[in-house]
Amino acid sequence: MLSLQSNKLTGEIPLVIGNLTSLQMLSLQSNKLTGRIPTPPPLLQWYAVSTNNLIGEIPSSVCNLTSLKVMALDENNLEGTIPKCIGNMSSSLTAVDLGNNNFHGQIPENFAKGCMLRSLGINNNELEGSLPRSLGNCKGLNLLNVGNNNLNDTFPSWLGNLDQLQVLILRSNRFYGQIESFDITVSLTKLRIIDLSHNNFSGYLPTPFFEHMHAIRDEYGKNVEPNYMREVKPTKDAFGVFWVDYASGLSVTAKGLEIKFESLLSIWTVIDLSSNQFRGEIPKILGELHLLLVLNLSHNCLIGPIPSSLGNLSELESLDLSSNKLEGRIPTELKNLGFLEVLNLSQNSLKGPIPQGKQFDTFTKDSYMGNSDLCGFPLSKNCGTDEETPAKFDRDDDGDELNWKFSILMGYGCGLVLGMSMAYIVFTTGKPWWLIRIVERVRQRFAKR
Image (cartoon, one colour):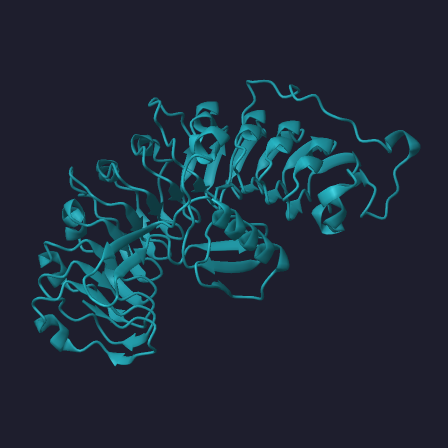
């Protein structure tokens, strides 16, 4: 094993590394290495050179690495196309991260029937085409991140076959059309982070989709031991253990800030459907996802009232319903959200008094802008005597037939996405107090379990 990560190394990777025929694990992550990727040793199993300044294409010699399990080349300046052999190698590969590079072309379409992939990250590139259906062969896939590319496809309903999938990120592509319901009863039962923001999805969200999200319900989620999503391998040397984080580099857009997390804790739960063309009412069944931390449905065409059932989301820390066509009063049940740090209801058609007390005393007028008929603190408009007490909505006021939407890692100006930092959090612009408090609270919850 050769591990020299986070050592501020400069220069090119020595070509002699290719001659280390017995080398099985190579980690040169988080340095300042330049140049091209040299021919890798033939017995290499772990190849981690992410977060450097490497250039050029992935060498064709990687196709000869029949024992390769982990390939982490993310956050470099690599270009060209993704070698087609990556699909054929999926019978041995367990983690592939090629995100944050300049790859173009299409995703390989030949993922093997015995695919062993648990994590595939190809986000932040220039990839085109559709999502290959052969990914359905990767039955153990935990994380799929294809965000920020130029993919043009309908919603991949065949992903319902992947009953181990926990994180699905399709944001900022050109996905379109309606999200169809799944026929398979095990569909995405372990899904806890889904980000479909900044696409062209339309229509309603089917009720069965939310009904199957058991990982965000009390009865399932609280019985799962929290852990980090990573590939871990014990070693016989002084290092003791070696790992590659599946979710390294996952980012969040929150109030205009891009926040990057280094590791993802399994108790993070996010639904982000922002910046699409979803219509219809918000369904009350969302209130049954009691372990949800982040909900973003902003910048859509949603109508009707805010369901009072959202007051049952006792763990919720960020709620963004802005830039829709929502009507009616703000339910007093939302005062039950004791952990809520971020609220954005702006640019709707809400009316009546803003609930007072508890977390609502901490929100500024920015949370309510663009609702001319709202009144009460923190707005300057006072409520009339007939409006001083907000109406309490009946919990059954949205019928079962309502159509709805969900959300994850957040959209343009109101987002928040996933992740939990093991050592540190990188903020591209400042450190917002509300996010620091959210991260610290999740860290404390993890310590108690």
